[in-house]
Image 1 (cartoon, rainbow over the protein chains, first blue to last red):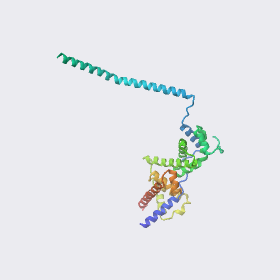
Image 2: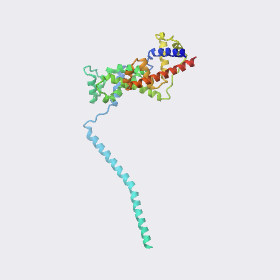
Image 3: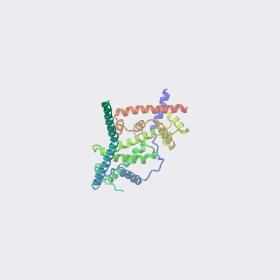
Image 4: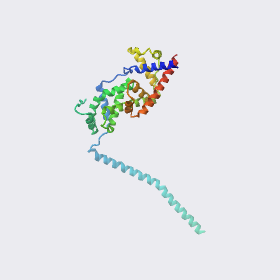
Length: 105
Length: 198
């Protein structure tokens, strides 16, 4: 048991004393190329500033999108409401006819 | 490439980047790339160093709004670098198709010699170094990303517990507990392998 512990201690010590694996297995690009790639990635990731000239267009676009959405919502509501309204009318007609029938009797 | 502007401090360059001048980020990369490459080279495989270093700088750029000037930029960048290396291993762990490295006869022999205390003086030999590094990689591939990171920072890089806690944003207790458990796991893996070779 003690032997095993000693062996493990020695193995562990040897492993951590080993220098980290050295040579990269893929070619590393020249530093200028690498840095240019980083800057390209950074520019792509950077949020685009909304310039003042763009603002009226942006506002107009937002208003147009809102108007289309409102119209779509109204149209959907009308579609849903129509059968309900019709069924209300049908219900009223049926109630009236029943009442008339009973009153005749 | 834009020339480095030595007259501007890191804080001044960061202020320019925050104000919308993306090009002001380039001198920061030039200034700190060696440090970032050194961290990446110690914690990810050689083939991934350049890509990881790029990821670190992009992440740092996107997080610049959270940087507070009380601490040096280099220190803040180191934290992002460590976190990126940690995420690399977490992603590797999630990929079941990643082939697990195996130990060949030379590695088994090295294990045997090292456990007898015979390999330590032989690290000047390139083959011995590679075998030791392979065995360590093989063993570390079997522990979690956080275990791997804490073990390498503590035992190979020689960081203190306090340093690791600061770099990873953990408490010192968490670092100690993780290091203790990870070492126990690693010894179990090595013991299992030694038994299998006999």
